[in-house]
Image (cartoon, rainbow, N blue to C red; front, side, top):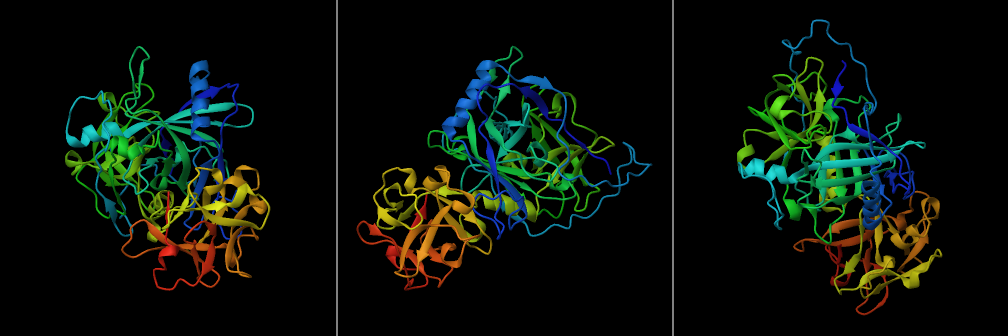
Length: 507
């Protein structure tokens, strides 16, 4: 059946500055660390920022200074649309027969209050609305098609996550090509955003630059899976969740609440709006959630720019918002339509936030700090294959940062962030390697998709939250550090949880 996706607020951009981009990546077993294939082992499609926080902020500052965005009417196409016959008798008064949800297990978390106080301009309301006004924000996107740079606006919402950095939105907001691959783009999130009639913009909590993005892959391009998640950088060391709080979440609902709340910031008003509807299951398989009563109009208008806003359980909204999906658009007979979060969405969410079975997240850039307080350090910034990796005191250098690439089955490539930034990527990447000839660790050129001595799994240490042993696939041996400063070792773990010298924590 045909479906309507809420039109994005689009604009053409003519910027003098180069556009910082996102790099498409995947965690398929046959690809290198910087591969461009579209899907990971969890079925998601991902991309990461290649520009720093400072570079991204400079880009947006120049864009805003030059005022180069021009309004444009249009919308992005469905990801991989699948034509379905529409019933001739369908009408506004007769929506199609509801289908069962066929959902998986329920995974949920409550809403989180902010740890820091922002300068909120919103009037006090119910706890749910007050919190949601702070966590819901304007998501700006910019990308290039090779000849023209485009800009768009959607809505996003902060949801509770271990990383404290995750914002949910709609998949159709993420620029992509006809093959379902994410186009290099730039994203900026402004929680609590509003704009007055005189053009004065308000960002009570500041703006946030992105680190990575993941979308739920679906060859059918259905509204029922129109979901994406983004991870954002910290703002002066502060996570967005700590600043504004976060909505709770519930993945895998099997029964409908009595009412749902949809929220968004449409481009025509630039103000926060909510819409309350009686839900029913839609015609997709598995079904989306539809809201009986036609489109959200008038005081609750959710038009272009509101895409990606949260779909929340209305029965518990006043006590604390719990998000169960995201606003996608409408169906031909006019009712509001939203994607439902199921197992595929949960897999992408966990991959971005890094909590799948106690493992870190795919595409995480981090330091590796040993229990002796020394960091894994690429010795003397050496770029050649075979350079030693030491335990060394914290210098803040890029040679002490590592890029984690999920290669499936719980194993990661651990790439040197320094050599990556120096241009040694793809087949030339330098990754942490177990030198089994002498039992040490070094930085070595990746061997295809990563040989067993270059693949590592992170095993959470019992009774020590946030600590891991890092184990080589070859021999299930543990990465360790000497008491003082010296080359890292790879040796027997000694116990199920490893020795004290083999305990590591991530940034």
